[in-house]
Image (cartoon, rainbow, N blue to C red):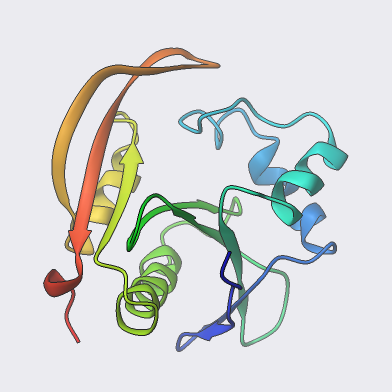
Length: 173
């Protein structure tokens, strides 16, 4: 598996998560509201969250740390889903929404994946009720390619999913 290289944006450094980040992300990952559209329920044990954040075997993670200082505010995930195909995921630390953080950080990650690592396709799967996430992907140039009904059973029951895709030649240089 590839390493998670450090990336930079105008306001953030994107780096792999550290042990000290677990407490920072606890409010997001332990919140029923923030985890509503995640594939699993909110975490109830910090040690389980620690293993999830630091030892994921399904892909690579980054956290966005402000250049101005302070704790991380956003987590990004990339899972290898075939040759030159990646799935992305992300979650915001509560209280940092609406500041353009997700767009800025995902733009840097997408550019890196397409231009430095040679990916051909990036996709995300979003519950149709998660309007902010769908709006974000649409604003980044993703195309909604599919609506799969009752795609998976999660902690909130059977859920539909929208599959969003972006190709390397659709991403601006």
